Length: 586
Ligand code: ADP
Ligand code: MG
Image (cartoon, rainbow, N blue to C red; front, top):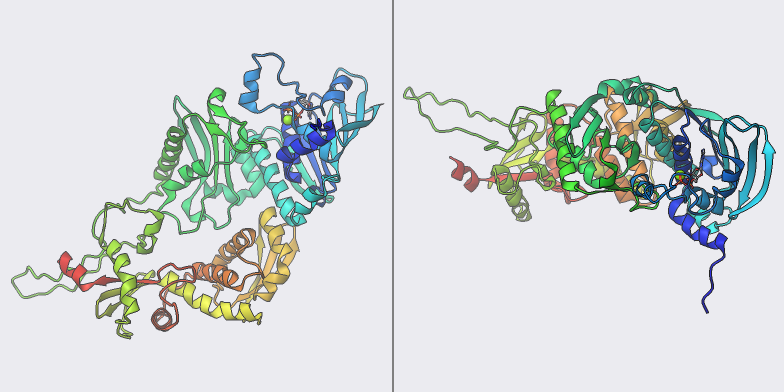
């Protein structure tokens, strides 16, 4: 027997697609306010949106009749005629958001149009209007969404911690704010103001108001106008690339969207300019003929499909590259070309003078990064051969335990081996060394030795702040002494031994800690992964030059400890340029 599902159950099922967490409800409500022409939007959140999500706007409001139907599925004022149907495709007006929210929460809607004397107040739950009354209220719409998922326990259980849910809320609030600088916005959480954003004339000022004045010097503009697409916005300078993902924003026709593909388009020109594992900030706005982009492929409209994706990829990439070049971030050194090590021993002079061997190396070139596709595969250079010979050699333990070495800049240690020239990556070897120290401690839950610092206050983004505060106890057990200072800041009193104690690196350390917390690699669940994450952060933060003592220690770590030739996640710590290789060269 086939049953037609009751309307509220059908709505409930559909709601799961559109509203999957408090943040998605907030996003829909804010977008409705913008569609209603609001100049000011206030957001009040209680308990990360579990208890309350309230959005108050000064937009056009609704008539009592419209208010009575706006919770119906497919109720939208934005599509009137068949011609307007195009708009469904272009802006994703589907009349689904309020229907979905009304199916999974207890909603109060108060709204009034300018031309109406009185407004209307509606109570809705389980997809039913429970009450309607006339009220006095300001022009605009005031909607309160209470007890989200009160009737869907499975969904409620699926919600993450308050801190995690609030991070999503912040993210969506920020995305809408950046795309709409002319609208004043505020966000209040549990009675505390989080953001107060005045209306500003441009995106840049909005970004500064959101993230602080210091972001200004970290950004450069991009602007490219083609017949297919217009690209504008700001990208981060390479030095300010972060380990934490967060400030990566793509907008199309004024709305945020997510696209791993176009993320690559933005990041590609940064290759060689930033360290492995770092991501630049960006705020990229695309404007395109609305019929050439489909925003309806995803229920919450955060993924879109472009008609000519590869073309758009190239244009975005070119725009970023052009800006990096114009701002002199793209180095003039040609990474793709030729020999990296050039050791001339041939004596062409008649007077018997033998010039000292000149080691010419490229300080920005990292031979350990071929897997990231830094060079095209057909261009095999000497460093490719280092990679391919490296590992087999070590299995036979043919390396003499030589302690004489030369430092190649601050990145590599070179030492002779019976097979040729061995090169150790300082960064990777440090990572292995730190891992060897941290892992046994984390495994046994022993205390990790701590170095005290002169207390240092650090301002964080609201997201990062809540992440750190939420994990203070765990961080403490790992040797971090960090305390909450309120107002999105923390004070650092101590760090695990091994981390740089240099003030300048502190921000970066905290950055990588928040990155590891947010991707879950720093947790109490898995000592190996946590140790790896800490080791990597410690190694990356360590900018000091290599002392003789440390060089010996790193050589020893690589050559003499178990698995020392690899980092804990299997990247090579060293490689060998074989004698044959050298002979072929000269
Ligand atoms: P859609 O935005 O796709 O039209 P929604 O379910 O989000 O669908 O909203 C349904 C309708 O309710 C909208 O088309 C609009 O007419 C009305 N509405 C919703 N929010 C507001 C608001 N803040 N101000 C005025 N009208 C609103
Ligand atoms: Mg809507």
